[in-house]
Image (cartoon, rainbow, N blue to C red; front, top):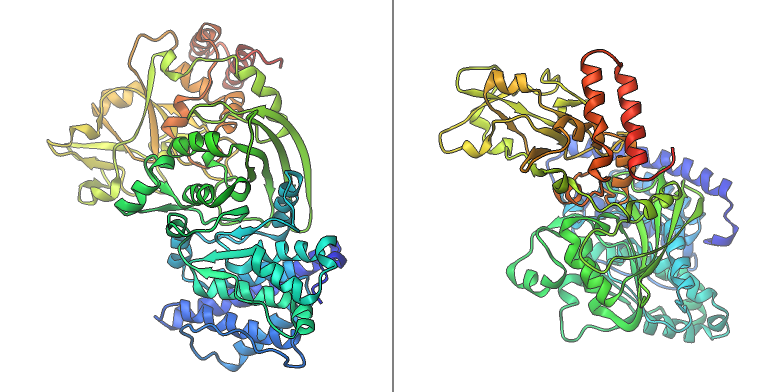
Length: 601
C-alpha cells in the first residue's frame, strides 16, 4: 500500500479514470444536497471527508493499534448510500500511492466546499506530478532532505508535506535511523501552517498514514506538526521560526487587508493585494538567510503592475533562481484562469534565471529548456519567454525601446462600471442616451455594435457624469480575454461615423481604449492593426501570463521603431480603395511588424 515507486503511467491513468467516476458521483451528491437543502455545505464537506478518512484509517490500521486523530467540527448525518460511497472511495484511495491519495483527498474536500469559502481562501490543490517536479527543482538548487528545516505555509491536504516526508524517509542518511529517531527527526524538521482547521487535520492524518510503519515500530505516534494559524499574521509575529526551505502552493486571489496588515506588508504591495503575493513576502520573513522558497503560483507577479514592489523586494532579498512554466494543463488547475509556474527563490547574485517549459498531462510531464536570462533590476515587468519558441524574441525585443507613448498615444480603461448605473441602462436608443461599448464590440479586428448577449446597449448620462463620455474615435482593446482565444491582444477602432451619429459613446470597464495625446506619425487604425499582429501578441505573452490585458502591461509593451511601420497607413489606404483584400492587408502588416522588430520571417 502507498508504494509510489511502483505506479506506472498506465496505472496512474487507470486510477484517474476510476477517480473521475467517483468524482462525478460526489458532484451529483453535492448538487442534489444543495437543491434539497438551504444549509451551508461546509458541514457536508466535513462529514463526507471524515467518513472517507475513517474508512481509510481502518484499511491502514487493521489491528487497531492507534486511534485516528480527532478533529472537532460541525457535521451532519449522511444516508446509507452516501456512507457506502465514502467507503468505496476510501478503498480506492488505499490502493494508491500516498502522494496520489493526498491529492485526491484534497480535491475531494475542495469539491464539496461552498464556492464562496473556496474562493475566499483561494484553494487550489497541487497535482502530485507538479509537487514532485518542484521538489526536484529545489533539490537541484541545494535542498537537503536530511538536514533542512522545512515549512509548508499553506499545507491543507498535504500536497507538499506528504511527498516531502516521503523524500526524507527515503534519504539514505535517514533510513539508517531507528523508527523513533525518524519520528523525532520529522517532528524537528517538518512543519505546516494552515488556516483551515479541518484541512490541517487532513494533512496530519495523511502524514500518520505515511509513517504508520515507523509509529508501530516506535510504539508511539508522531506529534502534531501542523499549526492552525493565519500565515500572513504569523510571519509578522516576533516569535516566528526561520526555515531552510519554504515550500507550497499558496492561495490565489485578491484579498482586502486591514490598515495594520497593509502597513506591515507595504514593502511588497502596490494597489490591490493578492494572497499569493503576500505569501511570498511572508516566506521571505520566515526563511533563513541562505534558505530557499519553492512555490506554485500564477505568473502574474512577473509582469503585473500590482506586483512591481514585490519584484523589487525579490531582487533585493531572494531573486528567482529557476522557473518552470506550465504550458499544457490537461487536467491541471482547471479552475485557475491564469498561467501557472513553479518557482524557486534564493540567493542569486548574478540575477540570472534558468527557465524551462513543462508540458503536463495527468500522469507525466516533459521538460524543455528555454534558456538562461538576466532579470532587470527595477520594478518594470520581467520580460521573459514562457516557451522555447519565444526564447529567440528576447534578444530582439531588448533592442526595441519604443512604447505606445512614443507613438503619441495613451491607454486608459473604460470608466463605466455598469452595475453602479443599473437605472440608467437602456435596451433601446432614446434621446439623451449613448451606445455602450462592451468588449463584444471587438470582433475579429472589426467593430460591431450588434450585440447578441447584451440586452442593455445604451445608457443615459447625467450632467455630472461627463467623465463617462468618449467624444472621439479611439482604439479598443479587450481587457479580459478567455483561455480559448488564440490571441491575448484583440483590438479594433470605433469608426468615426459612430461618433458622428451619436456624438459620444460610453466605454465599459472591461475594455481598454487608446487615444491620441501628442502628434502621431501613424494613424489610430494603423496602431490597432499593428497591435493585432501575431508577433506583437507573442511578445506580449512574454510580459503577461494572465487572461487580463492591463493598461500597465500595454504601456510597457515593446514596440518597433515607429519609422519602420509607417507603411501600414499606405496599406490601409490601398485596402479602403479595394486595391488589396483583407487577407493581403493582414499578411503584409504581419510581415512589416516582424521585420520592424528585426526578426527574420
